[in-house]
Image (cartoon, rainbow, N blue to C red; front, side, top):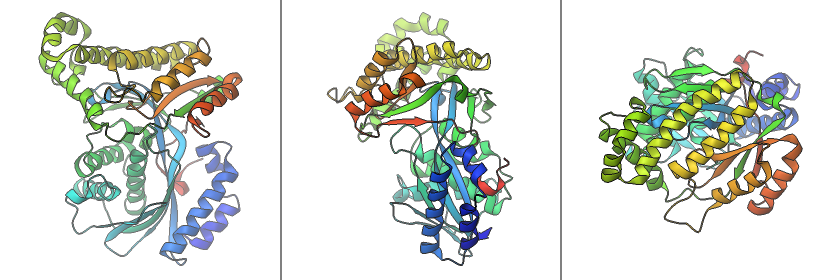
Length: 429
């Protein structure tokens, strides 16, 4: 740990420049200024005499497997160069205090870590849930103060909530457990906090992608012990750019739309005599389609078909990347996007058909990228963002047309980050 003054000197002297280059690419000057400002804000709020450490946890992008994780399927995901950073310091108070830029301070007493109804939907629930699960899993916990700032876009499908959870878990790991808690273990505890304390029934993909980092594929066949593999692929060498388009859609009042996907898939699973669609196959589904249609409707049948095909498609995408066949990978991305639009049906809300920003963004992308790139809905869908793989030669035209429709700053050009949640001083370069 270093005093505030020492931390500032280390940042300004370039001590962290190689770390910044690894996490953020060519944004070294920008990140120096960002971390310096965070240290100054920490000092202003919690005192200049404190000793502190720097932390970071990334957002994530889902590359393959749309709405497959909650039925024990496969996914392909990657951490990105947008993150939440923290300046954190040990505290002798038995409480965790976190001041996040733009929000009121959260204070969570460690004397009572049981779920609180009044916490639900608030970041304090995530903090309390992680502390509770750390303690239940026999890891050490204790008080700390932290200032955080984020550039992970809210409602972008880049999972700012998972990044925050992983950040809190990473702080507890390094301040109280010598960094000995594994990334997957942190991800599981983060999911527990979001499920039990925050009140959102999410899968494990977001937290795992943020905690582990890089391009990873996860097989959730055994949900308690997911099979996680790094995918060795140099995306930067392809000449393509990962572009996330923020259509400005509002996720409010869409909970029932998201929930309907899991409800439909669960209903079909029960009709097929299994708990999750991962436990069945296309032959069994096709044989039972008349009964599925009669009992649950055509949309449920289509969503089950999407799951089975997209689950298999993830394996094909991984094979394409590992064999260096990027053209085949792009073809599979487009195929997955069509499946989400046509069968999963999560591109626009049926309760507000006048708002179809995702549909429009996909239409524009296809017009520019057809035959030269790829496009698909990103994340949960219904509103929010699309994911696009854009060749560098078309990037100016793509960004210009997208931003002429959805506004300046709506096209975000990202890079794949090679590591997940980290303490900057423990990151081996």
